[in-house]
Length: 401
Image (cartoon, rainbow, N blue to C red):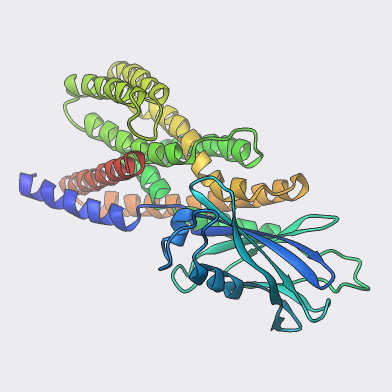
């Protein structure tokens, strides 16, 4: 392929990557303490989400008055269909620099027919997810979306059953939506499957990825591990670039210089990280250098390199699992609710993943039957170039922004 074609692919891939730079769903959280006709709400949102609005971020104790007015209208408690009156205006609380925590109090005219309504960011991010949590004798939660923005609460008297939280099916749906809109996860999976020539190879890759991300998704969501979110997102991008580079090496003359360059490159990045550059730690880059050296050495000696794809899918699948866990981990559900949410969410991720794999395998089967070998090879190289460019873009923009 000519240099002009490769430059065109690079530009197109960068445009594609920039339009999907963050796979993470737009989210916010609230905790409600309701006592009769009085209620206090604590609202928690990443600061970067507030940049979607024209009033700027929160710097406690400063809270833009326009943002305060917006929040009490977009996130409200209603009684009998009427919004409860604000009795203590919103105030910014101390929080990590990358998050905003805002609290205010309301008072309702009546204590029955209560409902929590969220329209937060719906006008600028229609896919925004808001997790509302109701504190009482038993903590329950509800996922509010543009399609389902209202949570009807139980009557104050004569109602023994607590408010129902989100169902298992709702978390399954959330998992499906998360993987289908997780462009970086899908691009990683595509990169792994580009060289799969047999159904057994597809099964091997998907199994390695599934087992790995299920492990770290569970550990992070249960609070057993607390990874750095920025580093995880940057590593996800880097994992995509590594897989694409591996594909290019396997389908070429396998020059010895490339594995050496990759290993030395990671070593140099480890040194730069030790001096404070980027979001990824020096030890992580050093581990990647060791992994690259061992992996390419094994590839050079292996008669069936496809078998080693399980190791790649598994190792980097561990990183992607932490990316999946972000939505649930931040919500801090109580144990009795978390297990059901985790099971449903993970099942949804797997269902969405299977749909994507089935689509890819169908297209690959049709291409094998009706497309010439040269055209298939060209399509594979073009797709791999796009995968590599997207991975590099995500890595650089997330690690060094």
